Length: 76
Image (cartoon, rainbow, N blue to C red; front, side):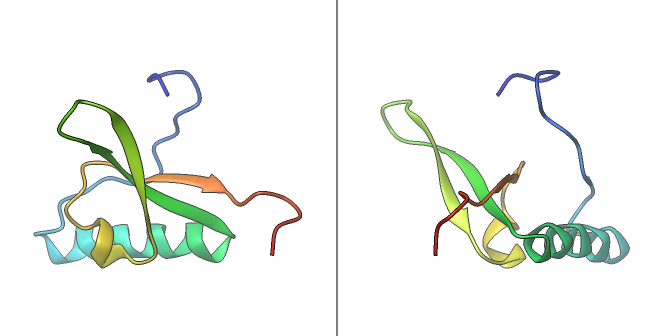
């Protein structure tokens, strides 16, 4: 994704500031409760860009960005 081409900022803050961390956790939970999947962008040693699925805020705590996307229709 390129900035300005489909990305939407849902929340931002500092996990070291308790109030901001609570707001980030709430925004994260809202997306999961709405049926979205969450992924954290990664780069391997060869420079290949990928993403790792995460299921909790704690797994995404270290990330600069979390990508939310809808689950595939018809899947179980």
